Image 1 (cartoon, rainbow over the protein chains, first blue to last red):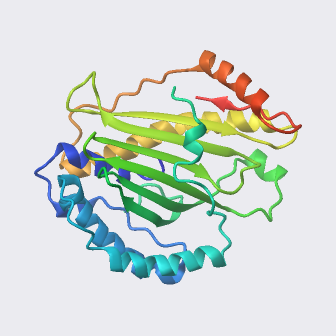
Image 2 (cartoon, helix red, strand yellow):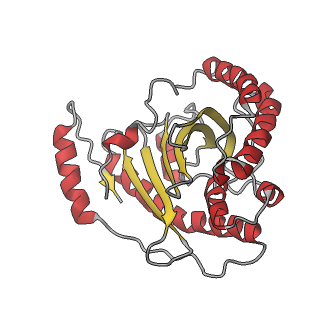
Length: 103
Length: 184
């Protein structure tokens, strides 16, 4: 468990009365691997966090308000990943997990 | 506020809401690489101090579960660590969350794979305490008070099952050098 913010997001499900501001208090403020991308990342994260807490977890399936900010952020970060030659490509989602037995 | 001071960068590189309303995400994380003193002497100082880690996650708000699968992209010869976490409602204690955490640790350094794996395993186990404290801290901030029930830890040692699994995987594994894996 590298960050506990993800786990805390999950615990929101047990507290339907908590609102977005409580949620924001515990978010870690992180930088992007691409130095130039940090501002775009933070903008996307803000949009996503709001959508996640207020829509997604409450079962609202109406579209994705963050598509545009995600696109801008991705354009920047994927370029940084290529430039730094980070070997992230080619692994299927949850790929290595498929080989792991249930314990 | 960053709970883990060793995580330097975090990026979402893929995200999708599936037809069955699950959220799939992939994150790329970069951490500093903290080697113990004895390992620092063995490995060249030119070796990159950064570790790149991928975390795939599935949030299922309908079935109320969060599954993450995490592994390192580089330094894999030195040590490869894969970790799976499953958060779900606890059956045994209603209104609480259960976390099942598993790790697979291997090393392919000639002559040192065993002690490196032991080190990795020991660090994983001791990190559980830190990770639990971090989680308690985050939850107490979220709820505005100390958690009503302390986080309980029951470590299941699957050593017998692991030995069998390791044997069959070792025989299925390709190529020459012996690469025993250790499971928790």
